[in-house]
Length: 104
Image (cartoon, rainbow, N blue to C red; front, side):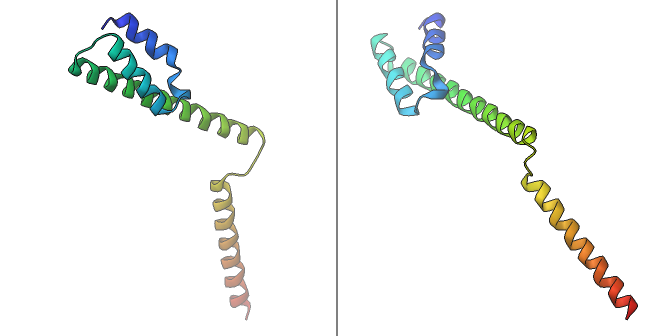
């Protein structure tokens, strides 16, 4: 199968925005239309699957980064911030408890 056709299919599908079932069906249809052998069809499907998974991962990474950037700009406390505050409160309670025991 020509590399140009592969690249066109990969680029045109919008891999990250489609469900795998849709992508798989389209890849099978392309393989059938191009009259690929079973081996070529399997290889093509594997290539499409790899590209799909890569596109999904990149999309997830971008969304995660965008959410983090938004939360940072919105000055929203993160889970790590809350854990640090809880630890600081526990430490302060311990210090206060120790000081009151020393005065008694």
